[in-house]
Structure formats: C-alpha cells, structure tokens
Length: 299
Image 1 (tube, rainbow, N blue to C red):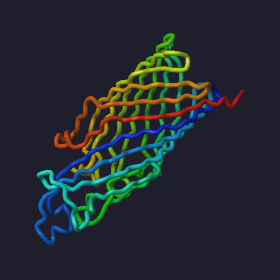
Image 2: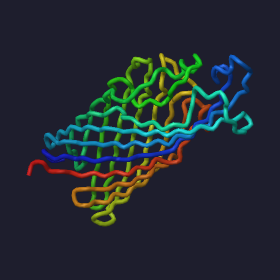
Image 3: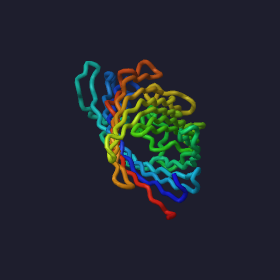
Image 4: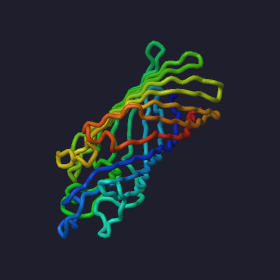
C-alpha cells in the first residue's frame, strides 16, 4: 500500500451447522426431580452469518493500521428426539436450547502491519489484539447442572487477546501465488471463567487473471481451534477442539479501484480432538461475498 492510501471494505460470510448430542437425567433439567424422564437427543441446527467491516490506513509505504468490526447473527432451531430418533415436544420446556435468533457485535480487531519485498516476494507481518466488546455469557454448563436456563452462544471472549499473522505473495504476469497465516491466541479466563480456544489459520492459493477485470483462483486452507475451557475444564458438550482442511474457489471482479469477491470453501477433512464428536458437528461449506475499495488520500 502507498502512503496515504485507505483500503476499506466489508465481507459477508455464512454457513450452517448441525449439532446432535444425547442428554440423560439429571442433565435434562428440573423435570428429572419430578419423574424418571427417558433419555433424549438434542438435534440442533445453526445458521451462522458474519458481516465484517474493515479499514486499513497506510501511514507509510511499509506500515499500515487496520481495524476490523464484526457483526454476527446466529439463528438456531431445535428438534427433540427419543433415542430411537422419534421427535417429540417437551411439555415442560427446555433449559438448554430454544428456537431463537441472536444478533450482536463480535470482538473488534486492531492490528499494525509491516510490509517489505524480498527477492520479488511481497511480505507482510502483522500484530495486534482483539478488543473485549462482544457479549459474553455466564458458564452455561454450571447453570445447566443447577437446572437453570442458559445460553451457549458467545459473541466475544471477554478479554484482550493477541493476534499475530503473516502474508506473502509473488506475481508472474497473469498468475499470483499467495500464502498467509494467522494466530488468534487465548491466554486466560474472563470474568465468568471462560477461556476461548486459540485459533490457528493457514492458507495457500493461486489466482489467475482471466481477463483484466476477472481473476479466478483456488485455495487450500487449514483451520485449527483448541478446546474452550470453563473454569479450566473442557466440557464434553462444548467446543472440544477441531482441525479442518478445506478446498476453496474464488472469483474477483475488479471495477476500477473497487473489487467484488465471491468465494466458497468446502471441508474435505474434519478432525475432532474428542472422537465422540466426529459425526455430530458438520458444516457443508463456508460462503463469502466481499466488496472493497482503495482510496488515495494523498494525491
């Protein structure tokens, strides 16, 4: 980026998740104190979306500052089943799950990025932190064990957490090769005893400029998330940690100083740190649509 340039944009991402797990008394809830409630399966569907706005200002040719602001939407629906798969409707209500749509700010990102060029390769390293803006919830597992209604969806981590990343790219005529990595570290517990799992992302890709206004590309991405902890404990019905390998395709349309990007990433390998979750949490793809533009503030 040239000194004085401002790079702004927004990216809308979405996917769907299906989560199923068996629940037995006394975890089912207060009804267990009144009668012998048969075990049940909670079959939950999540539709997850995020609109992430970003702005990056080049204060020097080699130094820029970036702010990212995420807005998240989570729509959930729940089907209760007996162990034989038969659906039913609990007449006593449920303390764990409900049909609902949640909207809120996630934790913003603030980063500094240093750029240079080495032997024809453009290189950038970044460092920053997440800011504790997103809503956090009390320990849902402790509340569940106490027979109280609770919320599992966390919009933030409740702490300032470090970010460290790198980017590299090399261009030959109409072909560009690129690689990137990002570590989002979680170093402690928030006021509710929640510690989000650290996340590690890596990506390699190739883009080909088909015509001046259109580029097509492919990516290989790795996403690893360590287990979340509540009061130092990994809960078996929570995020037990996972590592996914995804193949992706993207198209970029350039419109002067602006660009529109459409990408689809499909998981080809999904590994759960707890083997019991291997068939219980799946998503078909991650779809993203982005728009971006560069403004030259110093002309």
